[in-house]
Every structure is written in C-alpha cells, then in structure tokens.
Image 1 (cartoon, rainbow, N blue to C red):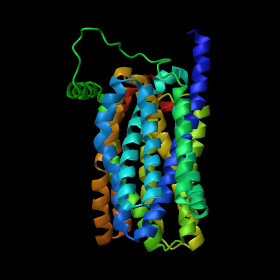
Image 2: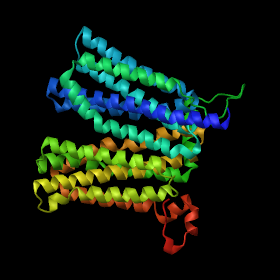
Image 3: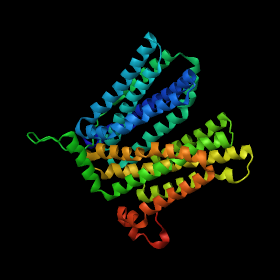
Image 4: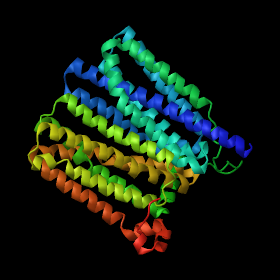
Length: 431
C-alpha cells in the first residue's frame, strides 16, 4: 500500500477505534452503574454488591497471562471482534433470562464474569495493536484519544445510567446495550490491524511453541528489559499503596465529613474531567521527550495529592471550603494520572517488539492489579483501627519514597541518556 494511502487509513483508524472504544466503554460503565443499583435495590446487601465487584476483577486478573499469549499468537483483529461479539451474546443471554424467568443474582454474576473476560481480551489486544493501526508519529495521539473515550464515558455514564434506570425497563436497557455493542463490532471489522505491524511470520515446518513456552518466553523477554521491569515494580507497589486513597477517600468524605451524596458525586466527576482535559492536551501536543522523567514527577505529584486528602481532617474548614478543596484535589489527581500513564504507554509501545506486546502488557496489568485486593482489605482494616489522616500521610510518604528509590536519577538517565547532555541551568526539559 502507498504511504499516502496508509496514512489516510491510519487517520481513519484513529477515529474509528476512538468511537468504538467510546461505545464499548460507555456501554460497559452504564451497564455496571445500572446493575449496581439493581443489586442494592434487590438485596439491600453490601455483600451481594461486593460479590459482583469480585466477579468483575477476579476473572480479569486470572485470565490476563492467557490473554497476552493469545494476542501474540493469533490474529488480533479476530480476537478483538470475537471478544466484542461475546460481549453482545452475554448481554443477549442476560436479556433472554430476564424475559423468561426474571433477572437473578446468579445470572448477573455469570454475565459479570463473562464481561470481565471479554474486556480483558479486547483491552490487551487493542493495546497491543496500536502500533499496527497507526503510524509511529501519532502513537501518543492514539493513546490520548483512547483515554479520552474512557474519561468521557466515566463522566457521562452515571448520569445516563441513572436516567435510563428510572425511565426504561431492564429489558429495554439491555437491548440498547446490545445495539451499541453490535455497532462496535461493525466498526472494528472495518479496521486493518496489520497496517503498520511488524510481526514475525510463522515458518512452515518450524516447531510450534506451547502456551507455557510462549508465556515463559514473554517473561524472559521482559527480564531482558530492565526499564520495563522497573515500571512493573513501580506499578505493583504504588497500586498497593494507592489502596489508602481508594478505601479512604469515600470513608473520609461520607463518614468523617458527612458530605452530601450529590456533592460527593461532583468530586468524582472532577476526577474524570481532569483525566479528560489532560487526554485532550496530550492528543494535540508533540510527543513527550523524556517519558520516564515526566511520569516520575507526576507519580510524586499523585503521592502529594493523596496526602492532601487528609488536609480537612487536620484543619477546620467550612462545608463549602471542604467541597471546593476536594473538587480541586480530585481534578488534580485525574490530571496527574494521565500524565503518568500516557508518556509511559507511548514509550512502551515503541520499545516492545510487536510479537511480545500482548504478553508484556498482560503481565503489566496482572502485576498492577495483583496487590490491589490485598491493599483494599488491609486498608479497610486500618481505617477501622487508626486515625484516617495518619494512614493517608504515612501511605503517601511511602508512595513518594518508593518512586524516588525505584526511579532514582541513575535509572532515569539510563532510560534517557540524552539527559546527560542537558546543561545544568537548563534543567531536565520535558518536551
């Protein structure tokens, strides 16, 4: 294919996968919102609600290594389309159960497990395919548009889910989700996942790797990439420590501050708006020159913001001041999260071989999520025993400390040797 035609097709891919991701993310989050309401309304039990959360997280974590192997072994286009079709069929199955015997917890839990698996396969495969879908110069734009879709869905889905939940019946809601998912399947079927890909072709007669050998080869490849190993260790530890925020934020605002539910919802929206605005910024600016350095600074910023959540517990503020304080805090956290993720993901897209992307990204996701459940359980216990402000401040200090140690200057300069040529008075420029 001529270069001009390839670039034109890449532009089509940029917008097609953005729309497809928006549809699938919006549908999934609206569905999750509506079903959460339904479960609580049906049972009034926090345990039943938590069981559905486990059904969303556990299958995804367990299946990640297999998803990576399959993404590297087989056609990524077929995997993405098959996963989206499976999503559509799962919702259709839930619709049939609803119409014939009524919606039940077992049906909801089963569907949640299936959707968790399909989103894992689709997510890993799509992430692994970015460099095959768009040209090298627009990888950052592609990653930013992808994040914009997720952020916009996070902002709009609670409002739409609440509106639809009160306005239409569950079968009508499920039919709308099926229609949206079917549209995503159609859009994905028009894309060429190998437009810019550089995957090794299978040689006839060459012995085929078993799944275990392939997964082992992915781990071996990762061990030979010290920078990727550092990123994985940072992800593992800061996600564990971030449990202090994920458990503590709602606990502090609802239990300690007695903030109204409407205001609490606005603070959550500020987080998504921060993500959205920074995603737009990264989609139009030139590529970050020193991604590890930028991400390191943003992670430190996240640690400081995490500690700042304890601020109103240490000083007297009016209700309005507390509301504004947490709006700004959550907006900052959402923005910093994008500054952390986008440059690093662009760097990884460029450095990891196409044949290993699925396995590496799946290992990264598994490691990032591995300690999250443990962190939530541990911090849930700690918040019941110790003052919330000290848990947050100590965890935030550890969060920053881990980052400073693992991403110390010598490591950053190994990732970006050109920093040694930057004059001291110029500082470590980021663009």
